Image (cartoon, rainbow, N blue to C red):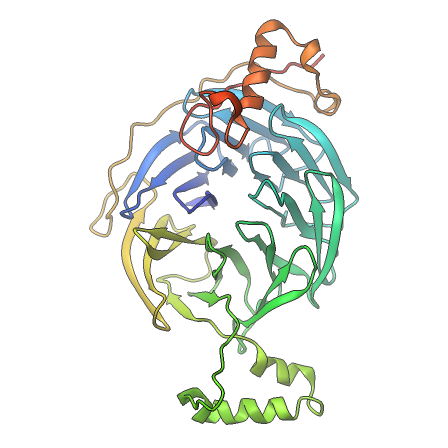
Length: 429
C-alpha cells in the first residue's frame, strides 16, 4: 500500500505522513494512542511526503514528476512553491531553519524561510537510496550523509554555517541508516550488514555506544530513531523484530555478584575480556557489545517500515508504521527487560475491520493548485525582499516571522503547532 512513511520528530511522534500511488494522507496520533486522519490528497502518486513537525507545511514528490519538489500549505489547500532539479529526488529533510533535497550525487540546502538555495554539496559518493538525515535542533543543525559508498563513513555538515564539520568512520560496510538525537549531539548509524548499531558524539566524533543487533543473519535496517530524551534507541529492519536499546553505561557494584555474572555467558565474557589481546577483534566484539534492552515481534517481515518511540501520559510507546498499511502501537515497560505488548493496531486506509482501534478520519480535501512554478535557475538566483512586489514582500516577512522559534513579536504563525504557515509565491524571471 504505502510507498513512503514518516513520523514527525518533535517533540514526540504525534503525526504520521503516508504516501502511496493514490496520493498522501496525514494522521494525528493522540496522547491516548488514537489515530485520526486530518488530511487526504488523492490527486497524485506520492513517493516522498515530509511534514514540518506539526505545522501546515508539507513537502511532496510524486512518481510522475520525480525531479520536482512541491511545498504545500495543506490546511489552506494551496501550493507555496515548487522546484525542479537536474535528477530524481531521493529524499527530503526539513526543520525550522533548513530544507534539504538529496539527489544521487548532490545535496541542496534551502533556507526554509524563503526557499532560496543557500548551498549545494556536489559530487557526493553515489547515494542510490538517498540516505541522509537532518537534525531537528536549531542550535545543532547538522546534516549527515554517507562519505563513501564502499565503507561506512558518516559526513557531518553544519547546515547553518554551511561548512563540513567532521567525518566519522562508523563501519567497515556501507551505511544503511542514520539518525540524530533530538539535541543533535548524537548520531546513530547502521551498515548494510545490519548486525551492529553504533552511536557517536557529533562534536568529537567519538563512539559512545555499540550494540549487537544480531549474530546469525545480516539484515537490511530500515529505521533508526531516538527517544526525545535520547535515553532509548529503536531499530527496525526487514525482519519481524524491532530492537530497543538503552543508551546507558552498565553499572557494576564492587563485590556484588549478579545472576548474569554467574551464568556461563558471564564466565565466558570474563574469559574473553581477559584474553582480549590474544583473540581476533571479531570474537571479542561480540561479547563486549551491548544487547537490546527489549524487543518486539511484528506480525510481518520483509516490508518497508519506520519506527519511533513516543511518550503519552509518561508511558513510553513504540510506534511502527508498515507498508502493509497498518500502524502498530506497543506499550514499553522500560523497568523490566523485554516488557512489550501490542496495544492498538490501526489501518491506514479507509477500510474498517475488527482490529481497527483508531478514530474516524476527516473528509478528504483536494489541493487547489496555484501558479507558482520556479525554474531551477531561478531558485538558485533567489530573490531579495526589495525586488518583490508589495504583496510578495509581506508574505516574505510572514515567512520569516513564522520560522522564529518562538516567533518574534508574538506573530500569529508558529511552526511548532497546528497554526497557519503563510504561502510565499515566487515566479521565475
